[in-house]
Image 1 (cartoon, rainbow, N blue to C red):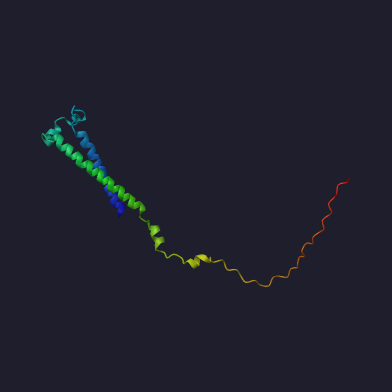
Image 2 (cartoon, helix red, strand yellow):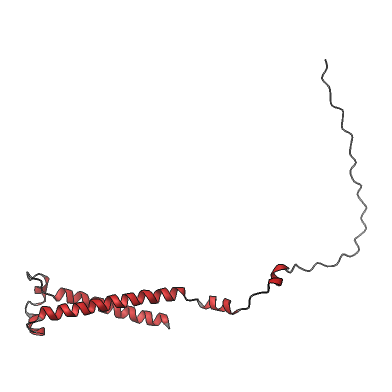
Length: 138
């Protein structure tokens, strides 16, 4: 649900950004730069004599909206990243094993010793006396 809301806000933020770019380009600079590309007096006919005030106010409103949505998106992305995933939620819902079960791990069952087949006993090796060390001749 949160990811759907984030995607809707992100799409709205892109639209606000594009409108902000267009409004900035429509504003008439003092020396008739890029504003003349939109027909010069077109904005005067559309908004009246106070064109620069209307466009400046709309730019401020869209700029504030852009920053507010961006801040909200950053908070929502942080909340989405720190919320537990479905796998983490399933692991958290399982009961933890008791400490006694952890202390004695279950070893594989070994069969009880049975009678061993008759094998001849191997005698232990006998120690052989060490040869006396040779003494150097004088």
